[in-house]
Amino acid sequence: MILVCITNRASYPRCKTLIENIEKCRVLLMDPETEIEEELGWRVAITVKARIFGDGQAMACTTGHLMADVALALGSLKPKAVVCVGDRHEVLAIAAASRMMNIPVVHLLAGERSGSVDDDIRFSISALADLCLSPHAQAREELFRHGIPSQKVAVTGCPSIDLCAPPYVSVSHVNLYGHGAEIKGDFYLVCQHPDTNASDAVNVGFIERIAEIIGERPAVWVRPSLHDACGAEMNKRLSQIAKLTWRIIRHVPHKLMVSLLYSCIAMIGNSSMMYREAAYLGVPCYPIGDRQLGRSCTGNIVHNLPKEDRLRMNPNDLWNSGDPGN
Figure 1 (cartoon, rainbow, N blue to C red):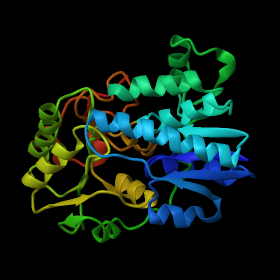
Figure 2: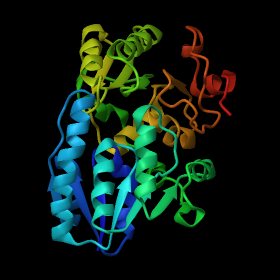
Figure 3: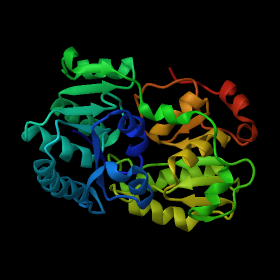
Figure 4: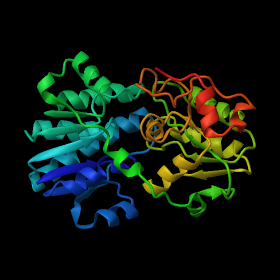
């Protein structure tokens, strides 16, 4: 039995098609969302609740508590291998526990650059892994630079791209989630995660800068994660400055999130979706801050922040008039 570990809503689409295509596959689900747990059904072998909310200390405590819980789960399930996804601090606990128990570790999305402390965590997971699955050739080369031997690395792409194909659902469905204005016509999509290398003041400043850029225009905001340091202060400031034309959500089903991305005029923030799904769909994206600095990107990443008139353009005009990444 292969055990795939899902630590949050975002990691599920990264491995959904993988789960569906492994014959003897079960799932470890952390702090499960009801919708995801119901969708996975019998594949869920065990659920774990170990997350502590707060600052960097809380992130460290979560990692420690989770490692103990995961060790007990692995001892009971005795999987042939464990699949870890991405760069979260929770994932490090899973990889470390598996390695200490001599259970082979497969690291999905290995070698990407994701900024802040996540970079160090991602490469630590890769160092613990027996097999590193990279989303692209540049990520593979990054692993080589970190001393990961070539026989442990394979380029497989990112499975979440499998879920980007049409048909898309109506973006009006987003009005069932979160609060704020109803989304009917053109809108901007915002997803600004906490940068754990920056202070609360800097992270709050990112929220204020995006608000200044968007102004009164319709927008769907994905709330910053409360699981990470600085997330609480960013959420507090977002609530204080929210406009009547914005809809603020925390989580939506992945298909709706892809549909929002496909339908928006542009995406603003520092989400990895800007460099994966948005790149695949050709959606123009404006990065804020340094969290994704150094990450491989395509021409959909526009490094010059938009001016008033450029935000009024349609997606193709925006993309073609921007300063694409390399």
